[in-house]
Length: 450
Image (tube, rainbow, N blue to C red; front, side, top):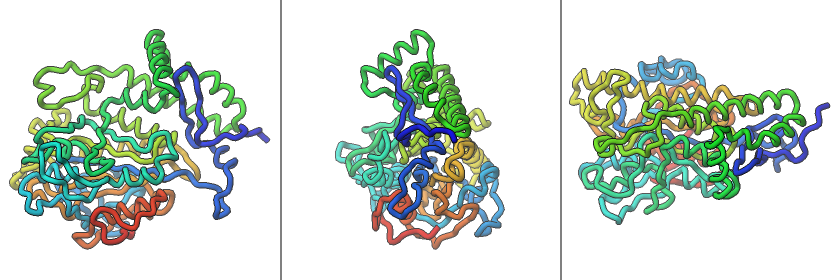
């Protein structure tokens, strides 16, 4: 019988100069863990994720007609065909906090600010912002201390904390959906290299900087610093775990190569005014999104965090997508006025975003964990706080829930709830799955049945 490493736990790391490489869940970790109070071995942790797309959706191409497991995939959802049995489409959910309630325009900013909080943000473009705590941060209060990072906030467009971004609403509302408290938005990271450095940082800032300098000087990999630790561990693992470790370290190195080799943006004054970004991100949307999806995968795989939010773009983003033949701005197109041309272009953008999300699901599904895959141990919301971009309505939202939360969700279905059901009812249920025993959240009036 192969001797198992003594005391190997989920918190074990491969260490070297200024570098700490967390390990994925190995079989020997499961077999050596203590039984829980219920007398059974602990299961893999459940991860929670929230992925936001702006400007609503072309709903005829999103919403299935039939309910249950025999629904037909719509043109937008067809892009997730390979993962049909790994998600549910949830119709009828509503975000009341994003409605005007006498405040007039500003639906885009409100939709982002309310998406994870369920709150109605105070209309201001000054310093007196007021929102609510977001569900990811509420959950982090319960389980954030069990991982290296209580939560991660990522996106493809940078956050702003001031300025007027939407009809008198602060840019803090329009570009942040994660809120630690009513006046504390959590700025998102857009640079894949910065996220990579955070995930594989050493124990001190000095060590981390020294390792990065040495790595760049000799064109080395972070794995070079932990090679001895890896070799020692490799000798003690059973064959199946040696294979898992090899595959994981290969994927880390592959991502590292792509992160360090990306083309840098050459920022012009026009670029800064239209799409302010740090100068370390890839030029192409595809590369940028895929690298950040790889960061999500590594963060979940190594249990570096169990809670994560991701914004494809800020509220009201007018980015164009010439790579798929859409030269007009996204926000401009969303005000389609029933124009068939504009609606067809919006549908193209929707499908393109779903393609990016499908990449993440594929990555998560490729990683075995416990009795299933990493995706099986996730519950990931994908959607928007606006339904139809022209109407600016916040009911019957486009919401998808991927993963089965460790077997707690029967997937592969279209579930239609009574229109007006609070989106926050879903969040209450999700918090329960990660051990956050909140009885209510935002404007919830119960717990969703999934």
